[in-house]
Image 1 (cartoon, rainbow, N blue to C red):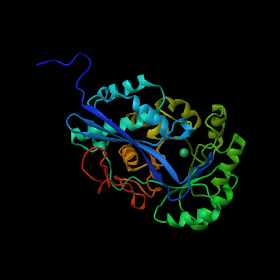
Image 2: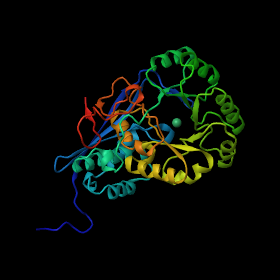
Image 3: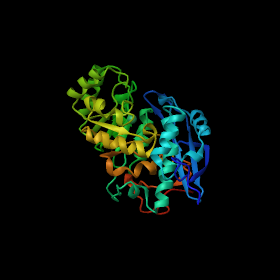
Image 4: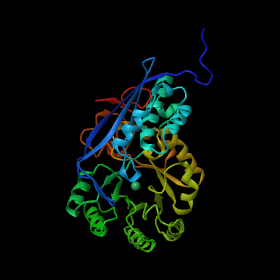
Length: 358
Ligand SMILES: [Mg+2]
C-alpha cells in the first residue's frame, strides 16, 4: 500500500464548478447607500468529490465590501480544487487564505460547499453536523421593506401581511414619511429598523432613534452611523440610545466582537462577511462571549445561502433571512419561511444543506 505524502491527508474534492446566476427582484431594491437594480447577480458553486459526494455553495457579493461577481469568479478561478477536502475544512480554508486576503464572499461560497459535502458524507443535516440542531417553529425571520415612495411602502407592507415582523430600511430624507406609510398598513406590527450607516453624526442618529422609540413597536436599530465613525462616538450613542443598537457594517468577523461590544448591544452576522458557515459559527460564538445579542442576516441570495445560514439559527437571538423571498427566480428549494417561521420540515433530502435545484 502506498502511503499519502506527509501532510497531504485524504483529499476528496476533485472538481470545482462555479457559475453566475442573475436573481430577479420582485421590487427594485434601495437602501441608504443607493439604489440597486432589479437584477442581483450571485455566484453558485459546486464541489464534487472523487466518491461522487457533492457540496453546493453560493456567494452574494456586494460592492460595500469591495467584491463583485467578477472578483468572486476570478478568485474561484485561482483555486486548485485538489487542495480542498471535505475531510479537512480548516486546512482547506487556510489554503484559500494563502491565495489572497479578504475575498470573504468568494471564500464563503467554497466554505458552504465544503460543509455541505462534509455533512452529506456524515449522513447528517448541517445543523446536526455542527452539533446545533434546529428547533422547528422556534425561528422567525423578519421580512425586509426597502426604501421607496410612501405609497409603494404601504403596498409592500400590505403584501407582507403574513410576516409577523418587518425590517424597514431607513437612512433617506423621507424616513418619517416612510415609517408613517408602514404604520398606515401595519399600525402595531413589530419593526426592526436598518439605517445602513445613513445618519452621519451621533446627534442626528440619537434624534432619529429617540423619534423611533416614540413609535412603541420598534425592536432595535441596525447600524445607525457609518462604520468608519469614531468608535467613541458610537459608544456615546449606545450609552444614550433608548433602543438596542445592532452593528452590521461595523461587524465582519469574530475579531470585531470586542470593539462592537463597546459600540452596540448586538451584531448582525452574515456568511458573506465571515467567509461562510465556519467563520459564521466562530463569529456567533465570539459575539455571545462578548455579551452581544446576535442576529443572522443576509444579502439578496438564493435558498443555498439562506439555508446555510438557517442551520446556525440556534446560535442567534434574531434572524433576518429573507433574501430569497425578495426574488422571483430562486433556482433552489431549501428552508421555507411560511408566515416568517423558518422550517426544514419539508426541505429536500435529509443531509447537508438540505437544498436541491428546483
Ligand atoms: Mg444591515
